[in-house]
Image (tube, rainbow, N blue to C red; front, side):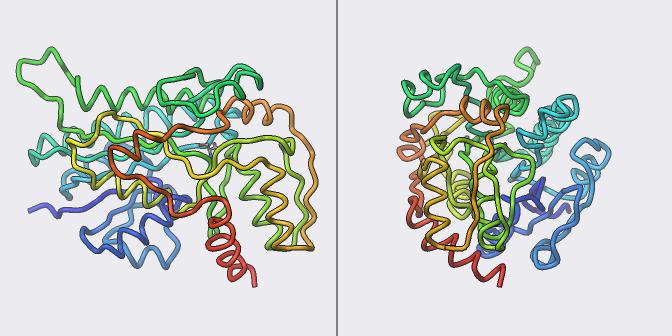
Length: 338
Ligand code: SER
């Protein structure tokens, strides 16, 4: 008999870090992970098996299929937005072909054990694209189906994969003689910028907020690459992890759409700087605008309308701006860099 497990791809990344700890606490299902990089030892101790390899290796995915019965997938592996602009072809390979491989994997799993595989997919505010700052201000809190004209490769990849997920869930091989859809129960969250106290992002464009904080805590100078008035939504990592776990557990019937915005707070870069400097008075934070990265952040909404997530599956972030910094980020980070 195959063993029943949850699969996390990209597990050694920022979200994976918190998610493994959280799922291990619940202790409901054994965890297997797939990542190019080995897990940190404290995380490796919490999983049944860590597989070091690529989501592009379909033979490896077939081996996992043969050995394990997976009914829940958190597909976190991706290249982030700044990195994707330098290597759009690899971005497409990892972000789109990789996701396609995992959807196909989930489909085969569902066909083989007969239950729908719940497939959690983190998308991003990068799926939006506002043409100008005026339009961004005018748009205010955007709804899931508004302004879906991303300007980045990453945003295009995420938006397309949202559609692929919906296709697998509802329309897969719709001309086949026997119905094959509904084997993948696709559930997607469009995350804002995420800020963790214990890991630093790499290759993203919302990285200025976490970088500011981590540099200050470490006593290093930091030059912020966006204007002080730049505003996009952010969320503390524990709330992002909770959202994934909560959406995974939501009753299927309660979900009225495949893709959900979630938001928590949306400070300007200057507001983040002020909070960081108040906590670390010796912080040296300057501004050196990178106009190209600025343009990307300016194309992202200043806030999101997450009323569907609140209504359908009870999303409610624990941390607002003050709580995120004063109850989670600053106390935790101060321990890390002592
Ligand atoms: N944090 C991501 C990035 O900056 C956006 O989802 O690429």
